[in-house]
Image (tube, rainbow, N blue to C red; front, side, top):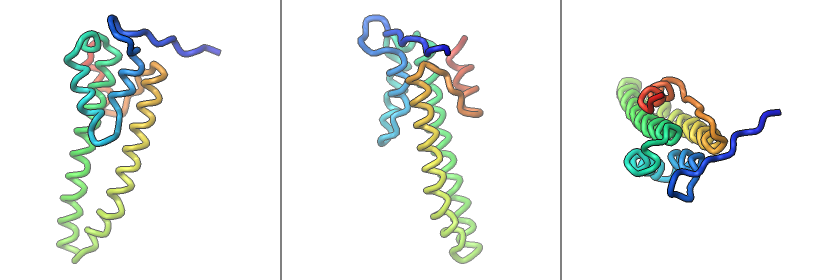
Amino acid sequence: MASAPTPTPAASSGMSNNVAGLLCYLPVGGIGLIISIVFLFIEPYKNTRFVRFHALQSIFLHVAAIVIFIGLFIVGGILGLITHGLGFLLTGILAPLVGFGLFVLVIICMVKAYGNQEFKVPVVGDFASKQAGA
């Protein structure tokens, strides 16, 4: 049984890379988005591929979530006008389900990052991996 590699602390910092990766996904009020942007610009994290990958994936995931919710509400609004309110009801049901699904995905990403794994979210993860470099 292979054990997970031991976390390596970033140079001149008390925080290990796996904790930095985990912090990128904090789902509380967009804090993870802010932390991800900060990690892309500060030493030593901007030079660590693992942290860059998780920071970029978190940013792209936040953007994708915003686009999904805007699209959901636009489609719901149009359907609501066409169907005299049924679209609004549909949006009221789908939005919390999509939000819960995204929350579960973020928790999975946090657990994987803490375990020193590069879990790739479909589409977003591949793009983040390319941007983080080899």
